[in-house]
Image (cartoon, rainbow, N blue to C red; front, side):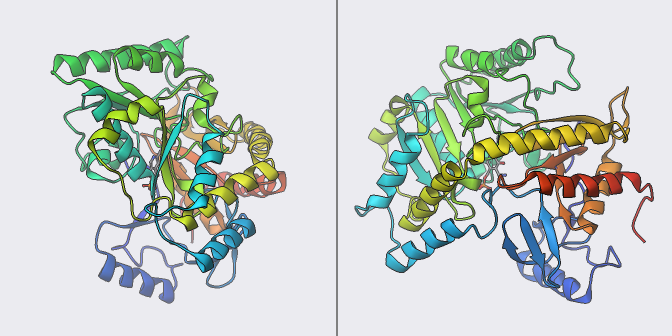
Length: 450
Ligand code: PMP
């Protein structure tokens, strides 16, 4: 089916006045947005949230009310994390330039970061965003393989550049898939019946490779988000991607692990989501939580894949890898280690999934609870046995929680998977607060707020 908006309840800025609960001040902000930002932006929620401050897992609106953040994986260590703030402030006050001067911080950071990857990944190049990282990975893959073909999952999202948007089908039918792009089904263990999901995914990938060849297109890479965040959150069974990665390699193409969502400890087993699958990527792309909000992304790679690219072109990204960004990145890694946040994501994520499974005993609408660490998907259905996706209830839940000042969103091809992705400093007490709010919203059968 045609992809629907991955974010139900998202409202267009041209719809002020939808809810009577939107204040006059909020209306005014929405109108100003429309006037200067144009038609392409979207706000979250039927009643948009006007945030003015953040601290830890809490966000505060203009009235001073606190919202529990169960959604933002950029401020993954919490909003306004003091060690990151101090590192950035110190570096800003000292020097902020770029990678064309000698400077220790980029090297300290690159060495530390590379030390956290398997040994075969020996270089890192810095960008400002995840989109830029994926764009660069694609350029490198093309120069190494001589191919152009790309394989992604049905509803993948990898970013906004012209090249990357062509292999980001979750942008919807209005953003055409490139003629060199092939999609494979998402590894939906809930709806797909295969006994061996890994073999089935690999068979789809082999078919996509064959189809590229049939059309005279040489495959360059398969790029994959190990937690499948826009496809609907799929984590299990661990290892199901390994055979697909082999198939890609056999075809002479590269496996690119997009860790923009699953990186930096979120999935709870290791720092990187691909490790859950026991595969060795040729490149890994990074973003979002890398600087806890400071714009920094990157590509980590096997040295040989960038040899030709380095021979043919120079690389300079004005803001990518600046001293301030690298100071933020270094502080992020230090805090993850010091506060054992990978283990926290694992333990609190397990507690969250267990609590949601208990909630499912009382709420028929919960069809499935899945995920890894603190990246959790909750499938909302109208008929459990038939697994009928229920986007309307999902929208009601997302907006109902927002009214209770709990922030989440949703994803999946049928827009019916609650997407839970709190900062990885989340505690079991925060889980209890969240689950109690979800319980109340699921119990409230009234279709819409007064
Ligand atoms: N890859 C994935 C898996 C993402 O989720 C995103 C952002 N949502 C990106 C890449 C693009 O990152 P950015 O918005 O920083 O360009």
